[in-house]
Image (tube, rainbow, N blue to C red; front, side, top):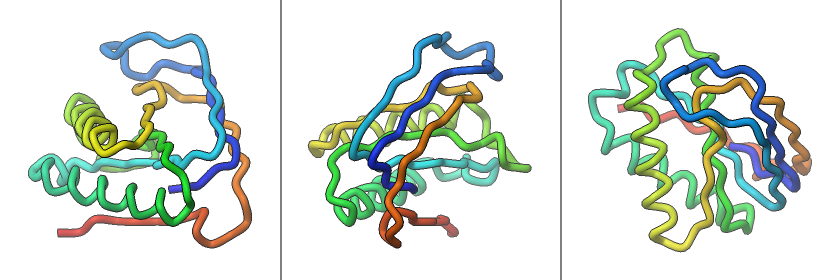
Length: 134
């Protein structure tokens, strides 16, 4: 997770043809960006990982005094990718749960390589790594 003073993206290359098309990018200020990788082994207990992710995002957002969270799929870096449909289901569930508790939440276009622009402050709470092991 990276807290960003400014975060922007622009879709470049679509990698998953079965997901919606995006052409336009977006830009945000004062936002926590979660770079999320779901692995094949994580598919077995989606509810567990959903709960862990929601709790971690709320904690990190509070730590950085923001109410705005961006969910970004970082799966292209993994050797053990979860099924994209299952991963997108997790993203949608996490977004809904966060919105139901008052957070402003968006997702970057799923199934795309993006041009990304990040402006993050140089403090420890702005960069948080969390791995969920069972």
